[in-house]
Length: 81
Image (tube, rainbow, N blue to C red):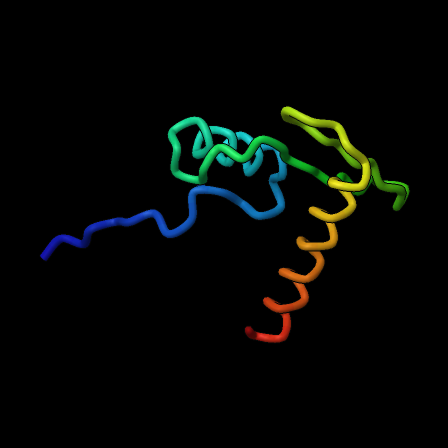
């Protein structure tokens, strides 16, 4: 009997550029929706962070709101909700 090999994960979660490329591909194919704005928080080697906003608007308060929603989502995932 021959075994069938299946790929469980195509990305390594430690490979941020590959994950971002795959996310962009999924957005372009319509698999993730085409939200008008994307925020990315990049942690640098020295512990500092950079925040990027890409899309149709560049409104600081809206970015703060989106990032706060992201925090709430991560906290809910951590709590198992």
